Image 1 (cartoon, rainbow, N blue to C red):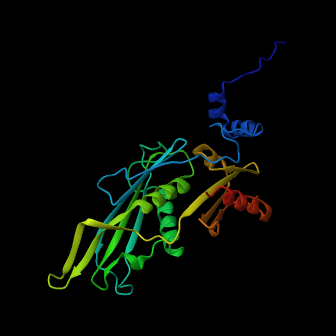
Image 2 (cartoon, helix red, strand yellow):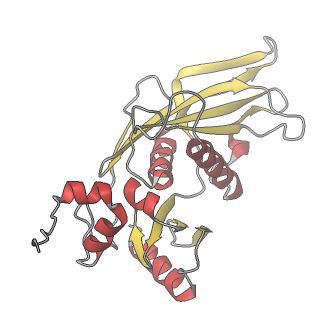
Image 3 (cartoon, rainbow, N blue to C red):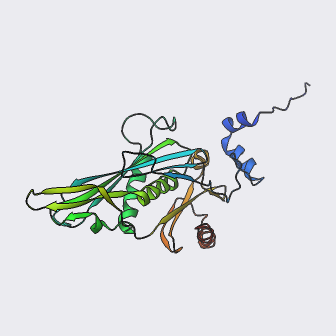
Length: 268
């Protein structure tokens, strides 16, 4: 009877043929594929005013993730039911150049979901005072188009898209604009600007759950292998602005409290 040879694989091959077992093996040692521990977030590097043609901009690098946000201000007529309020329109782009999982064509489901989530948070938390975007009631208001483009994607798109948007808003400046009654149009002073009025600064922290283990700031691979997700948003006073939980039942009250406390400790 011939001896049975034991097969052995390099880590890269093991990862491809059995990604869940590979991740489980790493987590048994409290490490992840990018070298972080399970509780460690990728530290974002933020650079602002990186797009000269935008009213506000920021680029965020966190691990392998790279997100750029450019905010362009345009003048429009207000709606009849909100004649003294402007608008903000966030749009997230996740194209094939940032990750091969995204295909050319219409926006991916993930991009559309994140765009809608960003909009809802901006409106429900009243982060931006829409009244401050009014130039002249019933006549003219500012519209802020926030285009968030992912240049390289490695999971947890929401947190990093939010960081890019928040950082860009903090640097956004609008021209001083007045409504000219005689000309019946807006007149702008290009050399005089003012910042966008923000009520606070919001931070976002997300986790995924794999084999009953909470993974902070999950990578793309970890997201694909997880079945439960949690996002906590807080302001600078460490008050909870929003909690979102999707799937699963592992994250009970005690685990939720741990995540809330962790988020509070990481707001500087």
